[in-house]
Amino acid sequence: MREVIWELAERLQPDVVAYRRHLHQHPELSFQEEKTAQYIASLLQEWGIEHRKGIAGTGIVAFVRGKNPRKRTVALRADMDALPIQEANNVPYRSLHDGVMHACGHDVHTATLLGVVRLLHALRDQFSGTVKCLFQPGEERLPGGASLLIKAGVLENPRPVAIFGEHVYTDLPAGVVGFRAGDYMASADEIYVTVKGRGGHAAMPHQCIDPIAISAQIVVALQQLASRYADPAVPTVLTFGKIASDGGATNVIPNAVRLEGTFRTMNERWRAEAHRRMKKMAEAIAKSMGGACEFSIVKGYPVLHNHVQLTRRARAWAVELLGKDRVVDLPIRMTAEDFAYYSQILPACFYRLGTGNTENGITAPVHTNRFDVDEKALETGVALMAWLALRELSYKGSDAAT
Image (cartoon, rainbow, N blue to C red; front, side, top):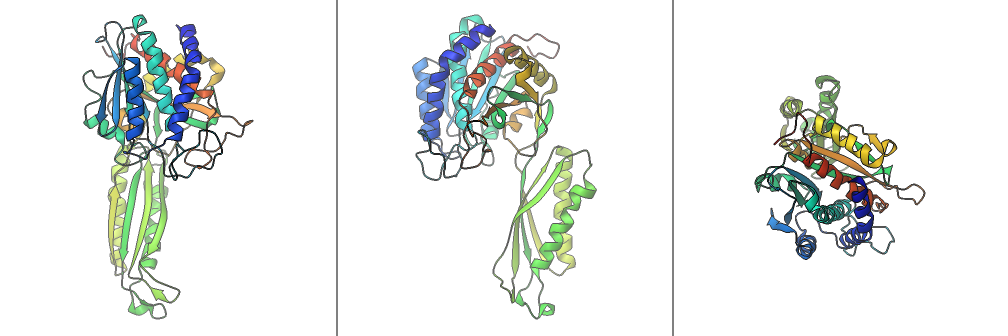
C-alpha cells in the first residue's frame, strides 16, 4: 500500500500545487471564505465526492467512503482562512487581494486535504470505513471555526475514532515531519484592562490619581503569576503588547490607561486559577492606589493535547512511510491553535509538515509578509495524511474504538 500511496501522491502533485496556488492567489479572511468554499465544493462535486457545505457559514465536510463505511471513521482537518497581511513575495501566484495573504499556510493545508480526498477516493475499494474531511473556516479568529463546526455536529453521525491535522513549518525542510505526544500547544486568552484615575497637571500629582503609575504597578505585579504562583513545571506566559492612555502629554496626567495582552499556559486547571488571581490582583492594586480597574479576559483556544497513544503510533507510521531520518520530535509551543477544540473531544494528533528550503531562501516564518513554502512538501503532506488515515482505519490495538 505504501508504494501505491506514493505513486498516487506523485501523480497528483501537479494538481495539488495548482490547488495551492489558486488558493494563495485568492485569500479570504476568517469567516469570509465564500469563494474559497465555492472552489472546494466545485472540485468535490466534479470528483463525485459526497459533501455538505454551509456549515458554520463557509465550512464543508466531505466523506470518502470505503467498503463497509460504517465500520470505523477517521477525521482529517484543514483550515481555509488567510491573514490581514500585505504580501511582499514576488511570485507568479502572489495574492491578488490587497492586504490579505495566506501567510500561515492554510492554502497548503486545504490543498493537501483536497489531494488526500482524491487519493483516498481512488483507493475506496481497498479500505474499510469512512474518512470524514473537514474544511474549516476561521482558525485565526475567535471563537475559532473548530468550535463552531463542533457545535454544528461535524463530529457526530458518524463519530470519528480519531482526528488528524497538519501545520506547515518552515523550520523543518520540505519532506520532513514532526510529532509530539501529549500537551503540545498552549491555551491563549486575551486580556483587556482599563485603569481609571483622575487626570490633571503633571506638576501637581498630589491632586491627581495617576493611572499610568497604577498601570505600571499592575504590569509588574502580574508578572509574579509566572515567577511565583505558577508551578515551575507548567509553562506560563503573560505579555502585555499594548498600553495606551486616553490623552496625556509630558505635562498632563490622563484619566485612564488601557492595557491589552495575552495569557498562555499548558494546564487548564492553572489557567482558570490564573484568571481569578490576575483579576483580583489588578483590582486590588488599583483600589489601594485610589483608582479603579476594569479587568476583562476573553477566553481563547484551550491547550492542544495530542493523544499519547495515537500520536506515538502516528509517528511510527510516519517512519514506515518516510523513513526514520525524515521524522523528528517537536518541542512544546506557546502559540495556540483552534485544533485544540477537537483534541478536547476526540483522540487527536496535530503534527508539523516541513516546508522550508534554506538553499532557495524559503525560511520566513508564518504570519510574515515573506512567508512561502517549498511546494515539494505537498507531495509528502498528501501521502502522509492519507497513510495515517488508512492506518488508523485498520488499527486493531487495545485502545482502538470500534
